[in-house]
Length: 272
Image (cartoon, rainbow, N blue to C red; front, side, top):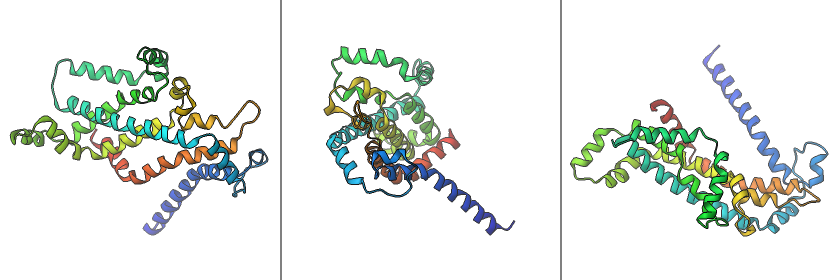
């Protein structure tokens, strides 16, 4: 087989798999342009003429407020999670202190426990701290992110040379200065990767808002989409349109940070 034919076959295969992967997303967009009853007749593959009515239904559910709440929760969760995880990862990777291995093992142990098992205790804790009914309980779990600490520890351990940090200290650079001036540029791909993952997880979180939020003014996108149904009718077309609109920020972020995201995953898989 000639090299050109091999490249052609490989490209065709990748293109076919890509189109196959994008087909569900395309169908989701198309379903949002149809009337709810049309979705039960057959598989819709062409745009309908009910888009404006579905947009009106979504807008009447105060979807803009839910959008804003989701942005606040996800952006704050991402910033705090990356900040805390990077600092903790730097400490575990480059410093020696008492019980270091035991503490790190405990962090890894928490990754093996399903988060649903601690939801009752977490709700009680938030009520005790008088934080129930606010957006804060949706942010705090991502600040103490065991995966983020593990990810940053492995990346910093393998990507940041000790010689560079020692040279910085000899030049009079403080620990904080070394972190922000030296470590952060080294781990930029890891920061991008963790930011995208945390933002995605927080943006799509449904269980925690369902339990913690009772005020409709604090609903996030997953909860707001459920309000498009009532006891007598489930407007699937409007819900699917809401899902499509809610997916746009994630698509934009992954498009912007795709190169750094892949580079971060690749570097971690090779060096980690």
